Length: 375
Image (cartoon, rainbow, N blue to C red; front, top):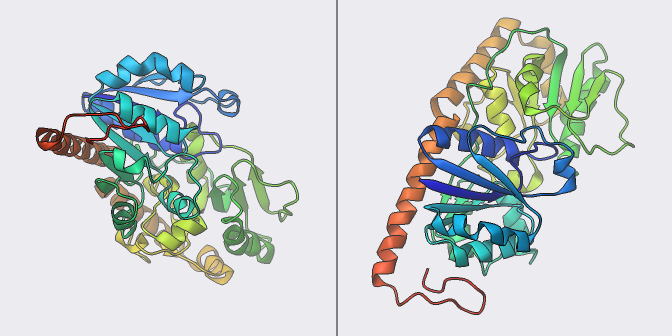
């Protein structure tokens, strides 16, 4: 299969979780014998922080703008499948162009579904719009549950299917290293996550000055007052994630407000930490118990007291058992190999359904929006 992906970024993981999600999925997809081309908008903030400028599992190419994208018309037209990702710059225009150009399956991969749904409801369409959604053969969502019905029933998605994030288990694995922190958190600053970070990490740090904490990630405002026992790291590249998790007795998972409200939205960090056998303390949201068994494979917390009880009272042996159980769950269900097989199956099914539609459709025409009207 020839696949073309137009996404936010593959080359840089700086300030986004898309890069590691694409890397795990597409590396495993290529191992299945497929050919992948990733087209990325060349923007200065990612150009200055590229940690994978030349992937060995796919071709990576950059384009300057929508005009520059025309150079890839032949590759898009000749692909068996084309995927446009959420938060792709000028994503609505890119989607229209891809739908008008592609002859194979055309899919949208939403790595931000709850945020997308909130934006759609508010009339904010930076990367996908109600007019473009029905033109995709397949809407791949990193959120499962009721959100899929909403996409189909309210916004006309042809086939909304869950495609959760995953982890490359060859890269994310347990390491033997010195424990530097009792509790760590890895994530870019987000205003709606900050209250939970305050409650579940910063407040425990204030109450337990003898314990050690770490917050890693860019864009945190300078005015945040960090306790003396909270170490700040501006950025930890993907290559260093396993060592970061290995240096943590526990790590914290924090979910954005829209994703908590929607539920069924596991972040890639959840799978990566689990694959490293680092015990996870997470906030609560619907659907989490379908991914991990609370109390056996993950700990859930709403208050600083719960966090401190785990850090202070859980015996080290039980802590290790918790982390190992989480890793077993990830290896059984959420590796990149699992997800790439699902991805391939969904693309092939969408291709068969599109071919069946063409047999009964009226002649293909292009309407005034540039979309293929008979899709």
